[in-house]
Length: 266
Image (cartoon, rainbow, N blue to C red; front, side, top):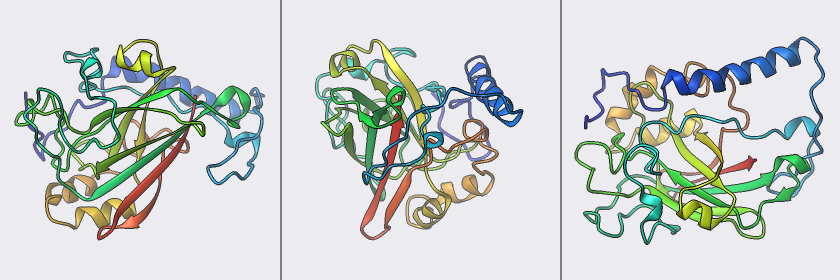
């Protein structure tokens, strides 16, 4: 296993055999729309505050690569079948791991899963969301040298009546070649998630630049400053062809911690 070096462009989430078909489909949709080709309209969406928005705002979250470190059994280890993975606080390792804790600026993730076919107005109660992310040094538990014995920053939650899940985490670092992000998989049920079967959607959440700048000015995130300076959402291998359905709304401060929210239409 290799640690993330500042001068290395990583293969995290950048496998061409996986990415190109997905990105090509998304670019084709935009080209068709620009050429005036009619697309199937969707009913109006409802935002998290309950307000109604136009049908054009309702679109399924783009499918993205899970990258090489999902921990869902598709590339080596499978944390989803381990007792204790269903949890809200993902800052600590669990089970037979080394028992470490991920350090960093506190981050609460609130994800709302809605039904795209109904115009984003219907919450997906009883679905499940698996999230995973890197730590503040850019390492992924279970895979990266130095944290292979840890399984922190990974967890599953079942959506409530409003389609929501919430995770207590830390703000991820920025490693070379990728914009700061959080991975997630949506499953039809908690049983599907904990058996790692029947994934409904795989995608990624992007974090706003101004928040990243504030966090990376704090102790422990020093390596992220230069890495972020070489990137933009428009140049990122995953987000560069559009991130409207993936850019989280973030509130808070370094002192109090941040809250990031995203509505996921599937």
